[in-house]
Structure formats: structure tokens, C-alpha cells
Length: 276
Image (cartoon, rainbow, N blue to C red; front, side, top):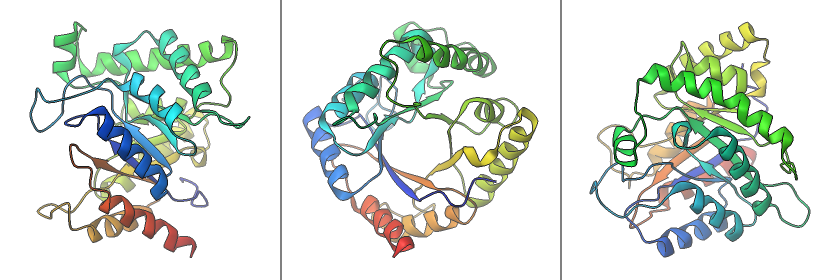
């Protein structure tokens, strides 16, 4: 299925809302020092929760800054909205951030997280056509080959095969696109739901001739319903249950202005306990 030999990795989605950039930058440094494997932001133009017109920053300019400011962690969006940029331009942006993130001759550290888009306010206020969910997925399927083709033409080329992370759980279209193009699949849900999505993804891999072990399985981790974020033991327990069904990259969200690293540290300790 998902390749159980893969190492467990911990991600943090440092949400670019309700905080100054100085606060976000400090938290980014704290996360790298704490030992996370990946730091994500997201690709929206307004907060997703809390004060709807609160402080918010743009995704890709922030990723470029993180590429320069960090040394070890991988970085990316969870996820980029395919609708907001020409795919050729997005490929060039990703290649550039990949190079900015490279250190001392090593490969770059960018993950291209991408999805079809869903937040209607972004579209209407910034002048993009919202269309339909199916149409946006069709556009994603159309644009991913263009991104891959542009990478093959750029000079200089990316420092490595930039990993493509696709988010979403639609079984008819999204998981087919994952099977065709992704290196990482990211989803949400309880272990039973995630296990089912893994099975559907494996079926799509068989149909398109892809080894399902090539695709890393990723999921968000959050407290059980009705529990508070301070109940950090829930994070490790939730991650273990997802681990048991094949998930290997576990990401927790951090909202501003106070970025509580307790859940992240709990997940890091759980990760490290697995290798003892």
C-alpha cells in the first residue's frame, strides 16, 4: 500500500493569519529548532477562521522568505490554489524558491503542495472565476503536466525533483490525479476514513500503472471532538492511530497570534520514541 518503511515525519502548518510577520518569522525559527521536518503555510488571501478581516499575508512571498531564513526544514504550502496563478509561472516560482532554499551545494527544500481551490471569498474579492468544484479539479489535472513540463525547460533546472503534494479526498477525480502526479497525498479524517482513502488511492494507482508505495501518505492531526488544544496527549494518540493505517507525515496547525508549540513538541517526542 503506502510503503510502511517510510520514516515518520512531523509537519507544522504555520497559518499566515492573525499575527505580524515578525511573530510568524520567530515561530518559524522555533519550529526548525524544535525539530519539525516540514513547515507549511497556506494559500489564501483572508483568514479562514477568527476575525474574517484580520491580519493575513500572501503565501508564496512568505515561502521565499522562509527559504532564505531556514536551514534544514522542508517548506511548502498546504496547499497552493491552482486557480490563482498561471501554471507556467507557478512552476518558475517553485523552481526559484527551490534554489533559494538550497544550502552549500545540497538540494532545495521546497514541496509543491497544490489543490484545486475552494474558498469562494478569495476568488470573488481577487477577481478569479470561482466556477464549479468539478471544473476546478479538471483545471488541476490540466495544469499539473504543464508545471512538470516547464520544470524540464527551466534554466537552471530545479535542484531536485520537486515533490508534489496534492490535498483532497475526492474519490472520483482528486485521488486519480494524486495517483497520476503526486509524491505525497494529504487528507483529513479519522483513521477509518483515511484508511478507506488509502485503499481508493491504491486502486487508482493500479489503474494508472503507478506503484502506490511511491506516494507518501500525509494527514492533519487535531484533538478529538470536544477536547481542547491544550490536551496535547490527544495529538500523539491521534497520530499513532493514523500511523497504524499507513500515514507517515503528520501535520498540526498553528494559528496566531499565540503559536502554541505544545502539540508540535508532543508529536516530535512521539516520532522520536518510534526510533528509540
